[in-house]
Image (cartoon, rainbow, N blue to C red):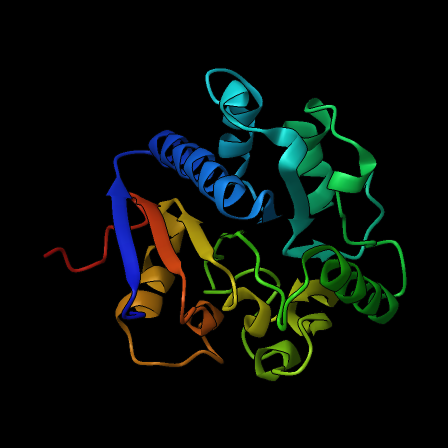
Length: 246
């Protein structure tokens, strides 16, 4: 387990969503006070959607200065934004499009472009919008697959060893598909990293990630070890079922 990880287990998936929404609101307030803005990379998959839906409604919506929030995505499928598989599309429907934000606040990955062109363009875009070397997000949200992948850093893929680039096109042989993804270099530079992991199907991989021997080629979530950040895992009881409890 990363030495600076804070692991919190909550009873249900809904409790995880509420806790994550609370963390989001607090993070926005802190970042706006310190830096005047808040940059967040949203995660795909089903687990974060409950959090997004909560943030779009009260009491959370009115607690956030949304005009100061810059939205990005940590990974994307190589599909158009209106495709049912699009990470952008899912998050936009649950949260982003419901906020009435200017286009300048929303930075989606262009999944409809050539993957390598899209990755290069997105790296350029976020460097311009955030700055720093590497750029430091205020918050990066992550999920985890039942194979231990996070973002689109899948086991055994080329992106796992990438240290120079911060956004890459990553071919995933088991899916026979290309994905766009942040690299571990960019993730580990963030001010805050929040993993949301729910469901019994994740329990075995989660135990390997948090308690197993280091093997990031097999369990890429182990690559997430920010050196100067808050790293928080929010788990529900089914996902945490195989962890040792102190």
